[in-house]
Image 1: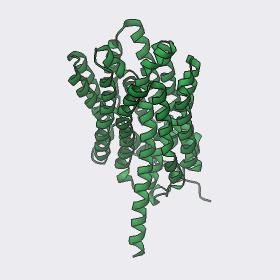
Image 2: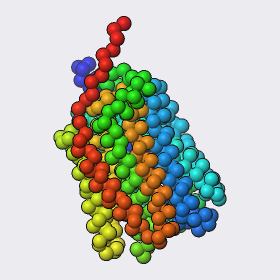
Image 3: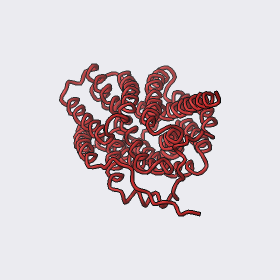
Length: 408
């Protein structure tokens, strides 16, 4: 009887933590992924130029990644709750004060430092490591898929909301409402402060320096980080510039908002499906398939007529592959090194992702200013996606040997 009650309590705790993590990611990711809708209104209001505003978004991509290894290392030591609390508050503050910034430096501070840094602290490195520690290894893929789907649901829900607020109240009020909505994640941070540990996840972490040195000497880890760099380039370019791409095709603003929403909706499907698939097929093969699909979809979009239907179909395909790379990437990190240092090591992989994100967001604006078109960025995106599909094939998908502990 006690065993049954204990198992039931563990299941309830598992789902509460999982939903709290998914909800936090929904609010922070949903806010960040709607920022592309504000690029044109911000440019009109400030007169800074698309390139300068893209720099703020691009720095945000980089800073989001830079914060994750440090946030992950801190969470590995003291727990996720404090890190998530600070992150949620910073996202809300940075988003709320952005309309008051009239210079490039001010936008970099509000969007790039405060909001993006907070989103990194309350981002996937901390959230997925928390989930991975409380469940059995065979269920980790599904758990990371559910958390990832939470971020996608946030984008699906908040992009149309942001579009409606933009149309009804202007960009200033719309952005500040989004900033206040992020505060709804505060109860989740409180809940995750003391997430229970599964018996299978009791492996003591290495010292941070030892874990990092082991990782950078592992070719499979480096190839995984290289592939995730490409993912960041692709995702950040779409999130920042897809509304501009659609506007350059002569379609109304609403198509940009709905395209972002459809990406979020179909990413829910892609994330959960990938979480299910992680337990059944090789994760490196799934990653290679995702990147190859991206390359084929972008090529088809370039060759197709730019109608509303084509744009929404393209957004649906991009949604299926958008962040479906996260569950197998997180799963490979856990499989290679265990969960003791997962927040730190997955945070470093996320940093690689965001270096690519910086280049995708920034170069998209620069190329458009120089050529009046996004075509060359699409060509680069295709080549990078093909390279990422190939680089995952040599990864050795097996746990690495760990030095035995010295007996007391």
